Length: 476
Image (tube, rainbow, N blue to C red; front, top):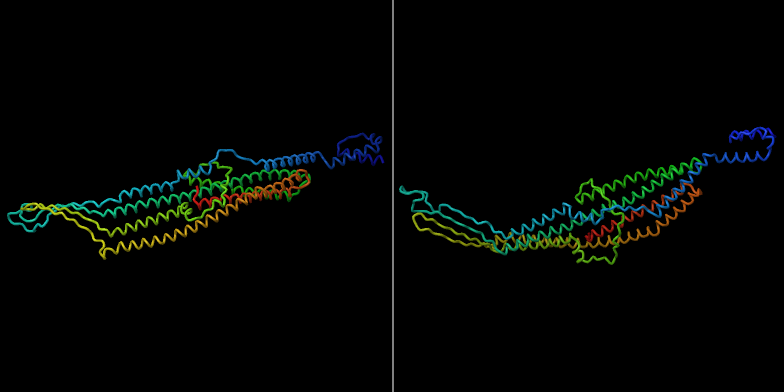
């Protein structure tokens, strides 16, 4: 019995490095053996390294829980000075070369108006008149009894009504070009708003991805340590690593989207592509409502530059038609001639003339031009009506879609995201208390991130719908 007990005590001493004299084997037969065996079983189950790893896993799980709680309830906000959307639009209006080019076109139209009432230049001339080819033996070219030297001055005098009609027509061209300014400005503003929102949403996605990458790294580190003490499994770790690589690819895509949007905004503002800037981190909705809905022809004609351009083009064509019909009015001519007669008294003549455009063979030209212009006016009236109908439909569609996206965003903010946050928080508590593994927590975290991604999608759609509505009504 003592030998058997002694053999057990030697085995215990070999594992615990507790060297005991053999005499103790004889004096302590039962109780010490039970205590040592109990200690041996406890140490065999919990060696010192294993206890240290378990403590480390527990600490990492507590740290992970704290970080996620901070992320859920105290999201990070940046306070750096940013270039607002209004600043971008103002910069485009001041510096975009396309808009600047229209001002020069308008100035050219105004300069052309000043030439509308110009007359044709006068004519002057001098030369021999009624001079015979032959000369007598006692005559020279300037000393003769026949012929003369004629001097003349001539001026065409246009009809004042024609000049007035031409002036009115040329003045109308500036109005057409000024309508082009509004249309081009609206398109540039729409591009700028879209690029600004693209970057805004991409930066939000990038922040979500960065937070998820950091937390996944910590979760992988935690479960790798837990796996060494059989408190986790490899499939959960591999799934987390796969998710990590997916997020890294998504991060590259969103960084590229930010770079593209930044390049577009710099191009529109006529700045160097290398210039970087921050943007707003919060962009409030305009909260458009059905009470703002107005698709009357008067409203559309007032707010749409393309329809305003058609209106002004029709007015310009009408003035051009008036100019064409003014060709039936006569023009005038005045001619003065002076004769320096050889061998006789000097003489003069004063001639006045008038055109007769109403002659049948002459009236065909302006009558045909007038008919052509009138047909063009009718065509543009139908085009105007079609554009009004299209604009009214676009305004209604974009406003209704915007209101729908408002409701989607509100639904996610008030119901969907809070529910997923609570579900993830519950799973995280179980993970911290070691009653749940990494995989369920990771699935709950994926559900939360997926809901945040869908929320950002609807947020992006809401902003884009606002931009489409503002483009339809041409609001800055």
